[in-house]
Length: 215
Ligand SMILES: Cc1cc2nc3c(=O)[nH]c(=O)nc-3n(C[C@H](O)[C@H](O)[C@H](O)COP(=O)(O)O)c2cc1C
Image (cartoon, rainbow, N blue to C red):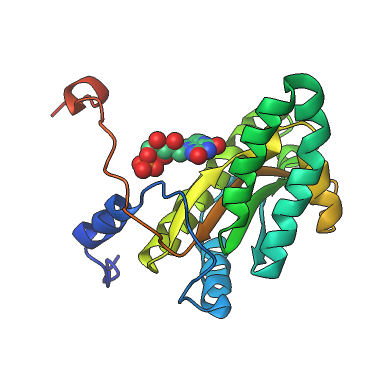
């Protein structure tokens, strides 16, 4: 078997991996075109692996005005629950946070389609469906990190959000963007133009604690 030539060195790949950071306070002033953003999303979803190639990941891209509408939908859906359960002060804090995301340029929401998981489970029904649900989550997270990194390599700032954990928000997103009922949202990547300093690398546990090597 011949080994295919790789156009990219592992050191280049790791540089890209290390370049990614959680960046807040991004703006809606971006120099990357919508077409390029869509191209990145399409390439990622066409490339990333999934268990038995089940392809359970789905993506919603909202840009510009549609991104603003996305966060209007989140705010409207979150408000009743947060106000009732946590009160006015907590709502104000949440609203400010959502508005800071709305000030960005785009949101890429990453979903999983449960019908793809059920289809794979039919092939391997002796295993509990939770096994395949776990694999779907792993694949979904691979899409998340790849998109997040790619956006930042374009010179944008991005963060990974889970605003859908507020009860009602997932349904709010679903109805605002005609999302099928079998899709469930796993994460939202909020991105836009850089407005300040890039945060420093957070401290990590020493590899002597986190990595075991036998050789
Ligand atoms: C699975 C996962 C979930 C996360 N959820 C959130 C989130 O909901 N909101 C947020 O602001 N950051 C979230 N983050 C970002 C982390 O807080 C951040 O990655 C971590 O502090 C390390 O910083 P870095 O991204 O700059 O390396 C999440 C990260 C991961 C990997």
